[in-house]
Image 1 (cartoon, helix red, strand yellow):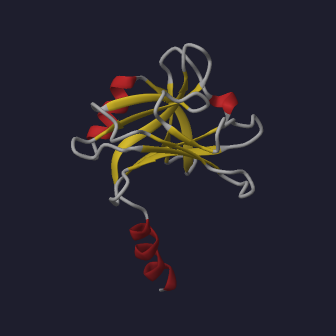
Image 2: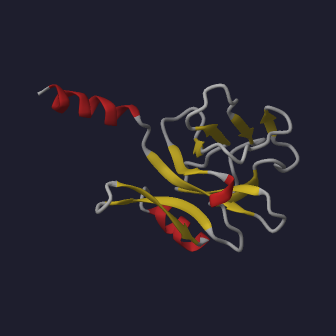
Amino acid sequence: MAVLLACPLLTSCAPPDAGATGMTLDAQGRPTAVVAWCPGKAPDTIIIAAVDDDSEPRIVLEAPGKFPGRTIQVPITDPPAGWRVTPPSPSLKPHLVYHAYAPVTGSDYTARGPRFSLARLRGNGQILRQRYDEKTDRDVDIYIGMDELVRTANDYC
């Protein structure tokens, strides 16, 4: 009985999705967040946090305003001019696993992303996401293109 009561409490804690975040390598080989979102729910921040290392500081990339359009690609270690980055000159450690997401400041919406390590990122337009595999009862890596990331985001609209 306690399990049945706890489940609604746990699922209600996560903000609703209003988009999707993926990770890739850009043409220069830099780890890059790729975000697609629902109309009217544009994020303005990308957060990268180590999954199992609380001593590792979160990387917070804040745009000068809401993201324009419906998609954006932002190199984590070299964001565009005008973006505020904490900590300055962020870096990702090869041995750590990170989680990426893009919240909508001032709302309950977010664009959840994958767990990733640098070794699992690919270039050439291959965006890392995860999909639940019923056979293994766990999330598995998948690589998709921008069109599929946009379709995934649109499923939340």
